[in-house]
Each structure stands twice: as structure tokens, then as C-alpha cells.
Amino acid sequence: MVSMTKYLKGLNSSILVFIALFISVLFSNRITAQERVISTGVPFLLITPDARAAGMGEQGVATSVDAFSQQWNPSKYVFSESKSGFGVSYTPYLSKLVNDIFLANITYFNKNTDRSAWAASLKYFSLGDIVLNDLVAGSIIQQGVERPNELTLDFSYSLLLNTKFSMAVAARFIRSDLKISSDIDASSANTLGVDIAGFYKSDLFDFQNNKARLRLGFNISNIGPRLKYDEGGQKNFIPTNLRIGSGLNVHLDSNNKISFNLEFNKLLVPSPIAVFDENTGEILSYQQPDMSFLSGIPESFNDAPDGLSEELKEITWGLGTEYNFQDSFALRGGYFNESLEKGSRRYFTLGAGFSLNFASIDISYLFSTSKVRNPLENTLRFSITFDLDGSEDAQMDD
View 1 (cartoon, helix red, strand yellow):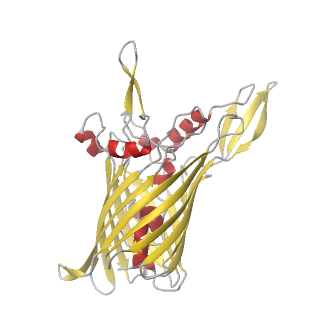
View 2: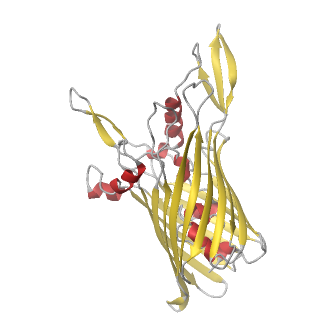
View 3: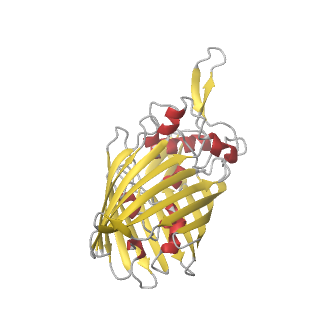
């Protein structure tokens, strides 16, 4: 349990201070000596919720379909061999420090026709219990317990445009409730986001004396208005993000398959701009520019102060592989890389999956290679998927 003691006559902390505290602690992997790291509101939207994708270097835009495709690329659902599925995942956060901060996710999909599918999901991020105390006449009096949290509720619809290519749109309600009871002017922040995604799946072709299949995917996620926590507060961009990826699935024989995946990510959020001292002309800090989210998307491609070289540093990339035996057992590995000047997230991942007739269990583990501590370092993540129509596990399609 996280404890916060306030020695104030009136317990009246600022919600902005509260948010800054948690963002700095929970996402310390994005804070470096470089001051132009792009930051957004509700960054939990970019945390990988499922163990399968986590085990392959945090990627899933062009991997084979599974129940958690809602997070990565909902247009994959129309290629599912299963007609419907249900997935539940749990990710401990900052597990070395506390035991009540976590990310939970529930996803359901339904392939209602051969050419279309829909899905819905709920993602819940708990920031733990905050114990509020006050100093009264020399004694500490407990004022209550707050449980700040953030959540999203998503719905997607995907359509097969031809035998090899599909597209999808998703709508997302986002709620961030970080206020505490003494913050009179603070309120929960709400906004909406939209995803636009596409997926290509080739026919089998000959590759090095084996059969193989190529997959390509993209997803522009969290396109939506900025959010703020009080009337006088600063508006924060939500993490609008572009994912582009490719995957090659090779059939070694009738029992063994292996896939290789590559994915690139870029936040479609403007780079921070410098704030200067009026007297000395020195840079005091960097802050987000005041513009709409629609203006911010194209601006994000050409606004880095150091030009193209810095724009390229804002792109993260990941490599992942998955070996599958008889659609019943899988081993996974991956690597994620981010520029040292833009957050310095660098780590290897490992994972495994076990499939039964109607369910699959996945686990993953992260090893950080960066000097900056990762809040998911040395943490096991768990996912379980249920094939509701009893068909072959859609996660392991070819």
C-alpha cells in the first residue's frame, strides 16, 4: 500500500502535483537528462496488456490474430479461425515497490460473418491505495483512502475488403480519475479516441524449401481530443500513436512453425517546445505546444528542434519471434529499442504459451538492458484466452 501523509491544516493538494508525482514514478523510464522526451496524458494506454505480445518485444500489429488483437490491430479479427473468443490478462506494475498497482484487461470478439467481426474490451489501470492523513493537535488522523484509477472501454468493427486485406475502426472512451477528495476544483478527465487499422495476410508461398506467409499491418490509435483535469489546468494530448509492422510465418513442417516480426512506433504528438527566461534568454523548461490534436498529428512529423535526425530518434522499434509446436506450445522472444534521448526504454522479453482444446495460457518476462529502471522489469505477465466455439485456437492460426 502506498502511503501519503499531508501535514497541512486543510488537506488541499493540487491535482496537477498529484498527476506529476504518479507520472514521474510510474513512467520514470521516460524521464532522462534529455528534456525533449515526448510525454502525454493517460500513458497507460501504451502499456502492453497481454502476455503473448509482451513476450515478442511488445508488438502485435502484424502478428497472427488472437483475442487481444483489439489493442494492436482489430482488423486481424476477420482472419480468425475461431468464431468468437474471450481473453483476460493481468499485469503487475512497479511490483518491486508495491503490490496494488496493476493493469487488467478483458476482451471479447465475435466473427459474426465470414467478412466481418466486432470486438469490445475493457482496460483498467489501478494506481493503488493512497492513504490520506492530517496532522491535528500533534496527532496524525487518517482522513480516508483514495483509489485513483484510469480505464478505457473500446468497441471495434472490422471488415474483409478482399481475400487478403481487411480494415477496422475502433472507438474508445477514456476516463482518468486521479483526483482526491480534497481537490475542490479537480474532476475526472474524460475524452474519446478513435483507431484506424489495416491488415494484409498473403497466401502461402514457397520460401527456402518451406511454405511461408507474409503479414503486414498498421494502426493509428487514440486519435482524439486533449484532456484536462480542471477548468484552469493545462490540456494534455492523449498518446495518439502510429504502428507499422511486418511478419513472416514459416511452416518448417506439419508440426513446427516459426514467425519473425518487426514493428515501428511513433507518437503522433508534437515535440515539446522551449520556454525561455525573459531576462536572460536561457531555456527554463520544455512544454507541450498549445494546439488541437488534429493539428498536432501532422506537426509531429516535422517539429523536432534538431530536424530529421531527432524525428528519427522518436521512432521506437521492436523485433520478435514465436516458435509453435502443433498449435499447442509456443516459445517467444523479442527486443524493444528506444533512443537514449527519447526515453531509453531498451529490453529483452521472453514468453511461453500453452494451449488446450478450449483455452490458452500465456506468460512473459522482461529483462531491461537500459540504465533507466523499467517499471515492468523482472515482472511476470499472465493472459488466458478462451475459444468460445470450441474450434482450433485462433491465436495459433497459420
